[in-house]
Length: 502
RNA sequence: GGUUCCGUGGCCGAGUGGCUAGGCAGAGGUCUGCAAAACCUUUUACAGCAGUUCGAAUCUGCUCGGAACCUCCA
Image (cartoon, rainbow, N blue to C red; front, side):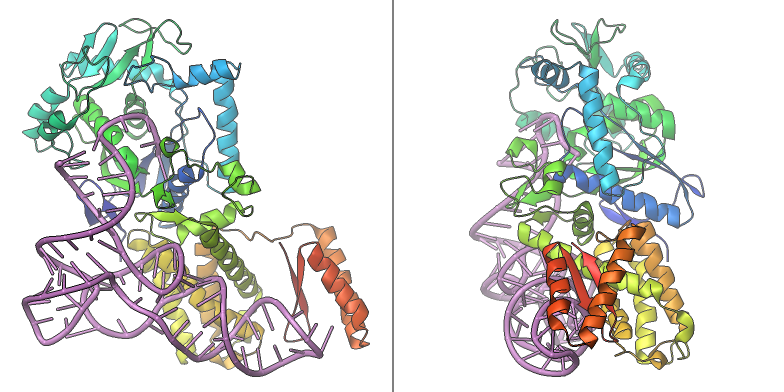
């Protein structure tokens, strides 16, 4: 079976075939570092981290490019003519680049907490002003952009007319029809520079108070919203690359404009497969700054937010996101996250037990017992589900079906002759591959401190001895006081004890 | 208003026309010095109406409800 992905461009699930065999170029829209990332931002980064990891697992050499938007070019409405970053810099009395650095660092910290792999290239908008200017010059030269009062706008209507003939109308990604849009677009201020309402800025003239500004053939200014992604994806991935990812809310206008710009410059639709993750909602509404309902990542990890009942470990968030398909909305609630927390712990504990099993001790012939056949099937399906547009939720469901089997082995409910050594090995191999390498999950209670685990072993030994002497005062004291510290002792069936640290 | 999508049991969520998704919570049991953990068993579903079909949560239509985008947004 081969990988199939849902392509937003065609609205169908399609077989994934890379342009260059063995290689994949993937571009994902990264953060705007004018503020701290929130839970909603976490979703695409985790989603495409899984895509990246899975493609790599399939044997592709993946170049994963994820930009950092560190130039504030957000003033399409022109109402206040101010750069978001420069404005905040004044408020916080920081240099713009100082602010950008601060939030870039915070973002990288959060990505590490989530165990997201770093992309192959993480280009910044400010580092590619030259490329963006060159691209704009090219678009003007081809007649698809015009200068007006120090700003440059993309001529959407001309583009739509010319490229519709090639079957590539403006709006083909988001299913919009330009003529309809012209009628429905709202009245905006300062639109007189544009020939048409649907036109978008490639370069904006900087007003005097604007701190971030660059010299250009059209005077001092800064790049428009969309051009950085076109410039950087072209530079690092070429005229045409395999995958472009991002949130569904970027489909229009951001990705639509990217397609238009790149198509004019490179004569090709930039990406073959467009993958869009859905939103995280809270009380049924999208989490986004315009709704004023965001929970920042640092708040989530610390529990320091009015709507949070507790802190949530980054791995819990990661697991929570993997429990649903990336194209579905995912509703945030304390109850749902707590359920994820419990589920993750249960999964990871079983995972640890499985990894410590000695496969040699199992005596069934492969596939001979019903249980053996079932386990083999469950584990085999991991690949099929991932190949089917990254169905992480279904993979997790299968993993959870393995959990009772693994725990049963530990508790001796599942005898050694119920499973074969080859199936145990296959389970270990597949679980390691999917849990650790592809899903990037780590045990949130893991202790990698040798001295602490030595101390814990000592306490466990003392408690065992106390129990043997029926000195329950001592044994309960050890158990209860450890529990008060957040360390849970668990008596196993065979008289052994294990522990988890909350 | 336009475009697109969704409505599954107490909660979150998979679901490709016929086969128990799964997680959390609840109930009963096993184990245990007690408890926890674990294991076993188990109750609640497919918004409504009509249609297609031998058969629909899954296809079609309508109704109701909700969301995203159309403006910065992951």
